[in-house]
Image (tube, rainbow, N blue to C red; front, side, top):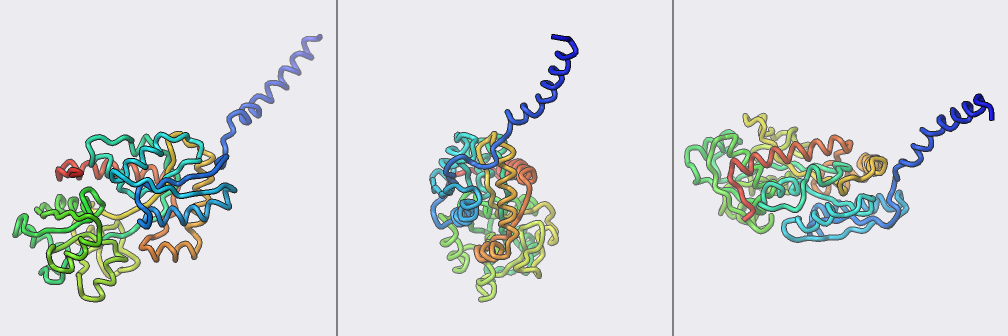
Length: 326
């Protein structure tokens, strides 16, 4: 065979290599079987409600069954660990609040790394937290509340739904920033904490804005400031803690969808696109608002940056305030 013919055939084969290589490494854009969204908390909680809404949206678009699996226990560690050990094929996902980032520093032994152990898919919602007090507390704003606490170190107490919750850590960050000493009273959930706040057995706490507003209108509590970066659309007249003179004090709730580490990029982008389109729908916005959540479309990269940033931020607060899970 002539050398020139060999050369032409060789060149033709080389020209096909990029195409063949692309086909060889082509990534799946959707799972090849039923999808389970693990929620590391009990049914009826915020993450559970949101996971079920997500499942209803994704099921017809992925042409696969999507089920929610509540694996509660150990403050969310059990379900979270299960996802960290799952195959990165898109068939096991998890819906998490920001507590899973906080838990990584709160407990001495945590069976996962919130940054390296998972693939961020989409930030879904945020929920504003507000600093509130009983009406008998002689403080009309956050600065006056700090001055009151500074004058009586340890005498002003506050409630939270439990150690290490966003409400607890938000107030701990406020105390560190304001350089005041507050006494933390942890409860087993929000309901008894709110009940004791209304009964004036505790002076203050952080509450979700949508939970606080009805109580504010009834005169049962007073809202001093919003813990989020921006003012709440539900209470635009209430300043943020940063505006009140406490820069860097940001405490809110967020919820996001993640998968095991190593999830294929094409699949991540597909899920992110589907979820962002869902979050942009007016019906979705209304459904989320009813649960006190604000639709928050994002990229996987931006969500990953949030997880990493909050991990460092809350680890510092937990260390400085000497907070433990007990």
